[in-house]
Length: 274
Image (cartoon, rainbow, N blue to C red; front, top):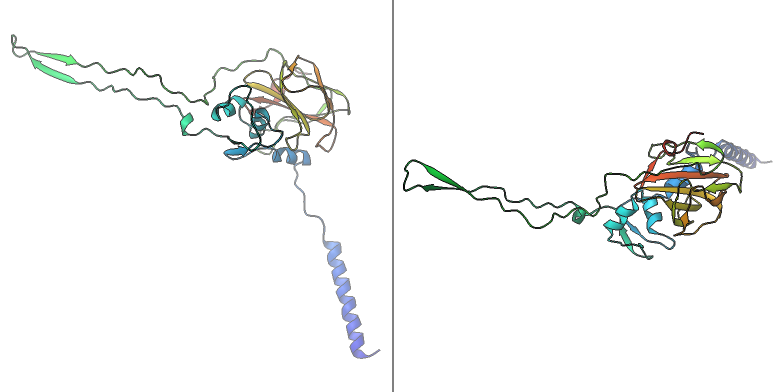
């Protein structure tokens, strides 16, 4: 073999061994410590000041994803019951200047007039002009909610099983609790109410049911297998509404949330002690 050919063979062998070593040392990028379930749930949130309605959306599913009270969302957008919305419409998610409380200040300045008494010198009478009272009622913000919350008489656990993930108040934390169980086991309504959403339009929640208990409280049941209820249906306490599954989840479980005026709260503060 000629010297030039030998050098070429040695160089190619070295190059191949070098590339092979690089391939062995290259691994997958490090993954986040947050579970894939929580990542999906985070993607379902709606941020910003406006949202364009898509097919399958309802007022309650949008308010759920935007984490604001349904009544507030309806008031901001001047929607009246039954809150019908259509794909393509833009909804405002935050109150604008028109929703700020406007209270006109009445003119409280007092005008004093001094008038000389012709009969008694040195004494003056004070004529006080009464301040004018506005006959117009002050305009209050349409987004104003009653400060007094309506309590739920009784809460019960929505499913049997072990809590595998607790509630977290952190920004990227779990906004409810995850209850592990067997596929096909019953899921029941945690309190009496009315179904305001039953569908799979919210990414990360799979087949989702949202029940309105009153103007203040909602409960949500995600990753269901079979759903037995439909929107606008009245639900009794403990009524079977679905079976446990893993739609849009990596294992069989129920993701359960309680919302107070659109905000997530810790379900453990409401559910009875086991």
